[in-house]
Length: 323
Image (cartoon, rainbow, N blue to C red):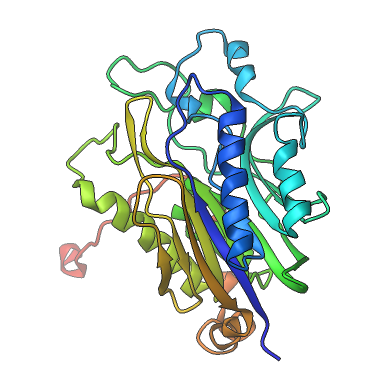
């Protein structure tokens, strides 16, 4: 019997700084209604889905940014999402800014079942950007100012999705560019990776030329490679459009374990793309080319965990020089 789960990437158009959370939540509820009408079982929303991408805005007093963070999930403002999940029998992935009781600040994603239970939580590990105001930049990217590095690792859970157990894992935005993150999920036999992102159409901190079209190419490349090299499906959902004057490129995708794009968003607004994922398709890769138990050689990978920055290799020396 085929193990098929129907998933949706619920792309969101821009959310402006002045808009309250209720605006975004109602838009998400409408996408959940559409997902239910299409027979979807799992809905994946973007990174920081409840607000504008606030790390582009500088607060000299770090505490002033706390208004962007959620202290409870669900909260009064996010309760309609949980109610819609119960009404329509949907599981959903939500990205948001989390403030913990002990004062921690994280870029967080959760996977919620139709009963409103949080089945998996992940906190973003690979934080891009900078921590202090940079006068040379037209747009700030202050994730390192407002968030701490995630402290939950890269967990995978075997959770009921669409009436069957699925090995589910989460990543957030810049994590998709790091093969180590995908591999840790792959080593836990992940079958479905959900990730949200908010990515500008232009590299605001480019030290050299980066063509506009390469932003989308690089995003897709990392997701397709991660899915293929770890024999997993991936649902990558964007925030898109011009938000607070900053253009986000969108192009949400759903990818299969062969690295093929099964569905792609074609607008920069609220858009639902769907795919039927036959989880048995993960078997081929993980039992042949990427049969980790047969082919991995951890003893040769020491640099990956022992070293942070790149180092120069030794210079070649001709043996004749000593003659």
